[in-house]
Amino acid sequence: MHFVEVAIQNVRGFSPAGRFPLKTGYLILKPPTADVLPLANVALSLLFADGRGGDSSLVGSAGRSGKAALTFVGQDGMTYRVLRELGGSGSLHRLNPATTQPELVSTDTSEINQYLRGQAGLPPRTTFEQVYCLQLVMLPSRRPRKSTPKAAAAAAKGAPAPSLAAAVQVLPAEDLPAAEAKVKVLEKELITSKAVDQLQFKVDELSSLIFEADSKLKGSEGLKAAIADAETAWRGAPTPESLGLPQDILSRVKRHPKAVARRDEALARLETDRDPELEDATLKVPPLTQNRYFWGGLGAGVLFMGLSVGLGFTIGPPTWRYLALLNIPAFGTSALMALRYVDDLQKATRRGSKDNRKDARLKKILDEFEIEDAPVRMALKALNVESLDEIFPALEQKDLLGIRLGELQTQLEEFEASAEYQAALRDGQDLRAQQEELNAELTAKGTYVRDLREVERELSRLKESIALAKAPPVQVAAAPGQAPVPVDPLEDPSPLVLSQAADVLTSDMLSVQALMKDRCVQYLTALTDRRYQGVEWDRDGNAFLLAQNSRIPVGELPPKDIDLYYLALRMTVVEKTCARVKRPFILDDVLTGVEEAKLPLVARMLKHLGTLTQVLHVTAHPGFAQMSDGSVNV
Image (tube, rainbow, N blue to C red; front, side, top):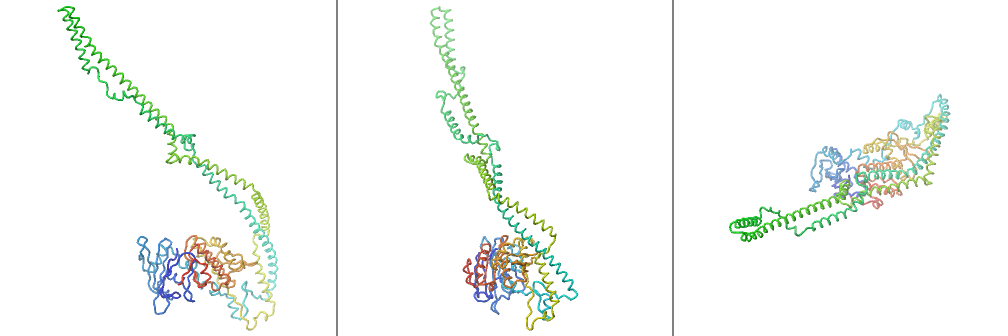
C-alpha cells in the first residue's frame, strides 16, 4: 500500500489549493509556512472518518469550506480515491482498470470505513496511528507525566520529593532494630548476588564463545545440505536400469541414424531390383483349352488322319501316304501351342517365386531395423523427450550429478579436516565443560537469587530510611524557597506500540519483543552515542534501558533520551512490520528537539526505511531534502 496523490483546498498548514503527487521511497514534504503541517491528521481524517464532523478543525481560513482528497493503492492492488469535505460528507471512488475511469463505491461513512478495512486492507485506526504515524504530540516528553500518590503528598506538604529510583520512607523509631537486622541480611544477600552475578557473567561470556565456536562449526551445514540435495538428485536421476532400457542404449542412440540410413538404402535397392521381362507379365496365363489354334491344329490332324485311312481302303496305299503327310503340320501347330503354354507357365512360376523372395527380403530389412529402433523409441517415451539429442543429456545427468556429489563430499572432508574446524570443535567441547561447571556452582548457590541491582536498590532505600529516621527533623525539611524535585515518571510508550505491532504481525507480545530487540538496540545505540547498550521488555511490554552498571525504566529517562528511544522503537516497528504488509510511514516535524549533529544519522535511517516502504517526512530542514528520494512543496 502507498499514497499516490494528496489534493487539498483551504486546509490548515497547506498551500491554499493544489494537487501534490507522492512517489514511493523517502519523500520530503516542505510546508509553505512555519506552521505545523498536519499531514498525519489529514490522512487519518480521510481514511478513518468518524462521520461527526471532527475533521472541521483542519479547515484553514474561517468562514470557508475545506476539502481534501487522498489517492492511494490498496493492498489488493486497486487504486482508490477518498474525497471529503472537511466537517461534512465524503465519497470513495475506485479506479476501473479496464476503462481507467473512477467509479463511485459509496458515500456512506460507515460503508466507506468498512470497505477500506475489508477490501483495501487498511488496519484499525489505532494501529495506523500508533504504528504508521509519528506526530509531535506522540513524543513521550510531550505527554503528561504519570502522577503518584507519594509525590502528590510530598508536593502538598512542601517536602522534598522522593527519588525516582525508589520512594524513601522515614521509619518509626521502634522499627529501627528490625531495619538494621534486615540490613545485615541484605548485605549477606548482596554478597551472594554479586557472586551469582559474576558467575552468570562468566556463563554468558562462555555462551558467547560457544556460539562463536558453533558458528564456525556451522560452516559445514551448508555443505551438508548441499550434499543431501545432490545425493537426492543423484538418486532420482534416470538410468537405463531404472527405465528398463538396455545397458548400451547410448551406443544404440548413436548408431540409430546409421541404422535408418541402411534401412532406407536397402529399401531403395529392393525397389530397383526387378526383372524387365517379368514386369509386363502381370496377367494370369490362360488355360490351353481356351487356345483356338491348339484345337484347330488338333482337329485338322484328326481330319486328315481319317481321310487318309478312308482313302487307303478305297483308293489304295499311295493316296493314303500323301494325305498322312498333312497330319504333320496340323499336329505340329497343336504341339507348338502346347509348348508355348508350358513356357508361359514356367515364366509365371519364376515370377511368383521372385516376388516371394522380395517379400522375404523386405521383412528381413524391417525386422533388422526394428531391433535397433525399438529400444530408442522406448527411451524417447520413458524420458518424455521428442528428439534423440535430448536423450544424451537426460541419461548423462546421473554421471554429472555423481561428479558434483563427489566434489561436495571432498570439500566437506577438507573443511572438517582443517585446523580451524578442529580447533573450534575442541574449543566447543572445552567451553561446554566449563559452562557445566559454572552452572553447577550456580545451582549450589541456590535455586532463586534476586538480581544484584534489585538488592542494591532495596539496601540503599533501607539505609536511607534508617539515616532519615536517625537524623534531626531539620535535615528532612526542604530548604526555604527550594522547589521540589519532580518525581512523576514519564509514560512508557512501549506497551501500546508493541501491542499494536503484535496485532499487525498476528503474534504474541514475547515473540514480537524477540523480533524487535536486536534492531531496536542498533537504532538506540546509534541515536544515543552508545549511552545505552541494550533494551529489555517485561511481559507487559514495559521497557528498561541498559546503561553501564544500571537498568533504567524508560519512564525515568531524561526527556530527550526517552524521545530518542521512542524514535528508535517506532522505526524498528515500521521496518519489521513492512516485511509482512507495506503501509506508508508518515512523520510530522518531530525532530525539532534532536541535536543538529544527529540529523544526518536520522536522515540515513529514514532513507533506509524508504527502501522498504513509503516514508513521508514533513520538514523544512534542508539537510533532509538532500538525503531524500525527492521533495514536494505543499
